[in-house]
Image 1 (cartoon, rainbow, N blue to C red):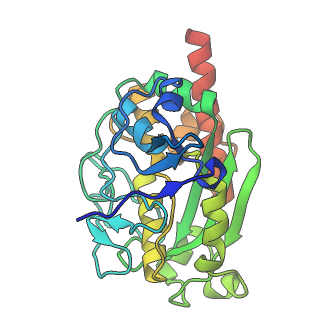
Image 2 (cartoon, one colour):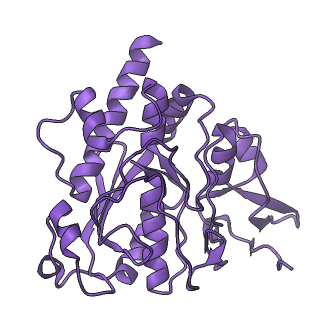
Length: 302
């Protein structure tokens, strides 16, 4: 049986992601999902607070997440298993066996969400693009020690839609090693990471930077899984918004099938001047450049 919802008496104490029904309706969000918390007003009225991320997902028919967002200490789940428990997290959207450390390569099967469910289509990718640029967003990218259930993040970068860097850092892995296969992809060795902060040292700042914001990533289920999985390895329960998939949106906007690798999309959009670096900040900047090119195309066709 679930306990009572968190209650706030000061609106400033509530997470930025939480909004009242009227506030969400003002932004054309009418499907809200279940309340996540309550706000006690000065006149004694109790007003439900809803997750903006969930309302956004319901509005655009985004993919199922396979996990619950943490609110005020509530447990986070990956594929139905709480963080800290033993769980094998499925590899999203991969039909081959790529080298450790590289992002899963799109195959013939549809990409899958964190719980292994097929991703559903955006109801209107052009409306989605309009919304993300109107509201603002963060692009996030990671490099990892591999793809499996024990892989973890060794570099992370996040920048806003204007290109300002919000976070960029190498990460010392809990395992204390980087497999050679991963090094062949992104170039990082164990020695390169010595002296870097650990994931627990970075997570609080990451949560602060992402709180209440739309988070986009290329092949988002992978980066989201890695953030949750790395947290699980450190026995942490992160408070992160759901990630939205720029790769999926790009494929639907351009009508190029299920998915496309970032490097190829950047080549098509003519925003790639050299080979993809497989470094978090450079890749995040590349995703932003691709999205901006889509926005320019959208404006030109309007």
